[in-house]
Length: 366
Image 1 (cartoon, helix red, strand yellow):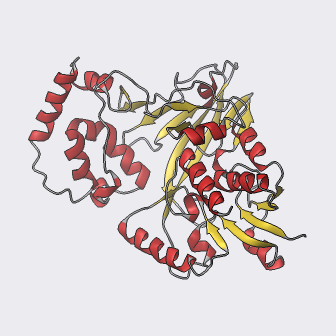
Image 2 (cartoon, rainbow, N blue to C red):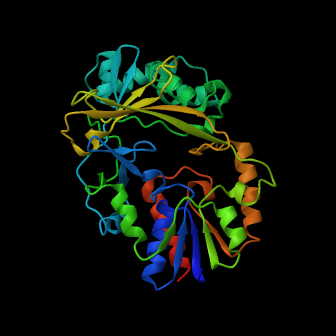
Image 3 (cartoon, rainbow, N blue to C red):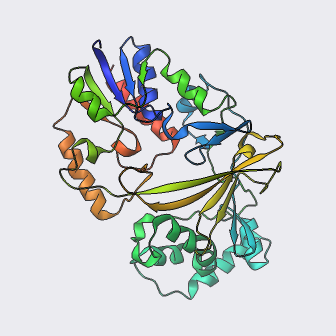
């Protein structure tokens, strides 16, 4: 194999955007991925004519005008607006916590009534500096919202009692005193009309791509394949876990085709009761206003990450953050490697933030 300017490990958003930028500058890029497809977690699989988000719902939203202009170079976006709902026992609530939520909870109609009810709820609490996530959430939204819409969902997400989780995991819980169900406040939002797979394909045009390829095996056979490496896998794995293992949560998806045109009437429905084993159900056709005769749904089951599973959410508690900082120091000994993406930088990224980070990293290479 010939010599490349960059070996890019991972064909997800960070690696693909970096490859696009470097290819446009005349650099030679080789992109490898251990999975059998490009796109990383934005990859979609077609089922019954429906683009199924194979790794969970990916709704693009941003307030970064440069990033919005960038992605629109490659695909067009529809006008989908994320307006999830939550089910607790037999009751249905709007998310985020807004006037529709407050009206359903307390039978009120005006913002002043909602604010008075929240103050009444929190007045009975004797919480100084919150010592855990439960105290933090109670101090932010009071017991009614916490018990119905936060507690069970959060405990399923993290696999731990809220009293065992650190307070800083929930720094804020937005309360909106309007009847607007739009989950995101960013001015730009939507789903690619041509699909996320097309976005990934166009980003990688001009780069050489090898799939089903493990980096660690590949680099043993081709140690001098490129001048620099862009690594978007787990930073602790890159260094052979020599300082210890970073922790992750993962998600198991249960996808089902149903013989009806519309099953739940919304793209995203959260189940906030602890006794329901999944956190939410996605009905994929609603992302693109589909009218197919059948529908496809996916139930999401958060679980502890184990080797061989796809790591999703970094467990950003104090001990893991301290360990990650040690790995960052170790990374300074490898100036030939750029660590990027949610695994390389051990943080949960929205898609636009991944693109911004990749654009910034590429700009530093110019």
